[in-house]
Image 1 (spheres, rainbow, N blue to C red):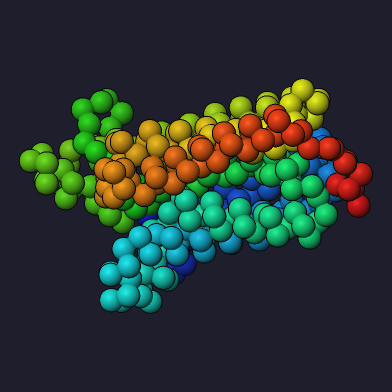
Image 2: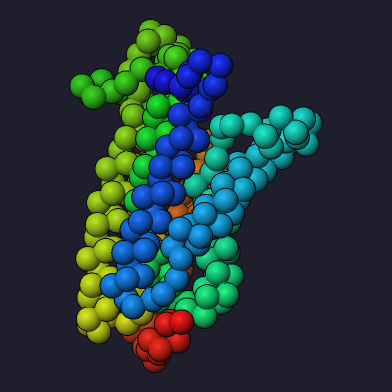
Length: 270
């Protein structure tokens, strides 16, 4: 693992570097989506603001998952370079996007549709940061040939191996790598789905509904090999949030099919 890059006296966390790369790629994808929809807006400014809101949300959600530990010593946890929750990032970024859509006078459903493929791709690249830093997002031990050992990461996998009666250098599921490929595929599928929405075959908002459902299913399944603690009905917090996202996506799509929104593309042009 490579938690840090050392350039002389300057140290760069690889997690932060990949998050920045993910935001940059997301901005390019969002700008391309704006262009094909005829929306005139600055995707780089939007991604920058939403990205910061997502990072804050992900950090706060993570530390508040263990409130006793947080309130016992809050400041080191708040300003740690590692420990971010996917659902908290989604809530923070989504809230910022709603505000930005209103500010840019873009119909919310069209705006969320355009943001969905970019969000999936940005998340995928950010997960490479988790892989490089070895920040504890790996999975349970495995004998599969692509299993990896995270002994030199920020959070070593050795303890997990020893707790299961295995050698300290046992291999575990590289869960961030799985998510990288899955979310890239999701981003591609959402981009293709967006073409159908733009062509009028599906109502605006369909891409965002697809994002909620497909990413929810993916995260729910990946949690079965992750090490997160169980809470509600034997599920992790991420699985509970995933179910909520799936149900919300299905409900919104049903509403869209029952009452298709009236498109007003002129409002999206400035």
